[in-house]
Length: 120
Length: 170
Image 1 (cartoon, each protein chain N blue to C red):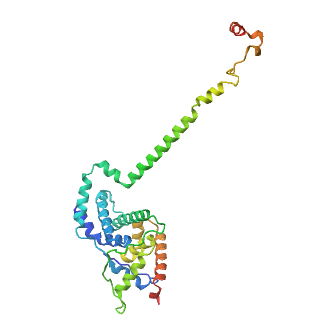
Image 2 (image 1 turned 180 degrees about the vertical axis):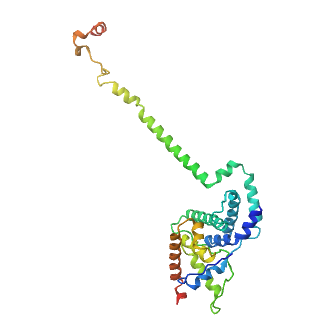
Image 3 (image 1 turned 90 degrees about the vertical axis):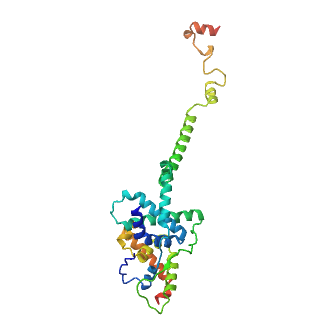
């Protein structure tokens, strides 16, 4: 397993002792791996897909983006719609005239049949 | 499944050694080895053999070890990281000759403890180079980093180890 390279001259000799410690997989590894693979095969494909870290991270990111976008859209929609009280206030002058002039403000030549009704 | 058996037989030792050296926990390391084999089995059809099977297997193992270490840091909630777990399950099997006047096993254990205290990136390259015997090029392929980065990490690791084991230098 250890295909040891020839150590460069500047490396201390004691560094070779690092290779003295090694490990082997536990007994029964192959059987356990086969069991785990078989269990994974029994899961529906979409469950397996969701369990993959990349897929999970992507799903969460999409959820966050959609939530933010939805909130941004709702906020902008609400601010674009005129507030009812504000609209009424804008139309309603302080004197209650709705911005329409009274008879005294208009010259006589402009008065017609309708204004005649107003003037009376 | 026959391929799985081959992978385990040929590379299981290196994978287990890397995992236990990095995670310092025999149980978790075993889980990483099993998960690595499963991923290799699932990704097998896509393997193109550009870098060699050993490099590929160790890459999977190293990536899984990093994920576990990252998760440990997150759950430990500490900026310093968790204390290294001291049951890596590494066996002492001397390689090559040594001065019989020195207690080789004790020295190997002390060196192992010093390696365990290295930052993750330095520990990774040290284990790969000096425990598993990977060449610089193999390490670049396994870790997916440039040669300069590998050499730099090795140099920093060696500086730290020399400081820790300064009495051996005399």
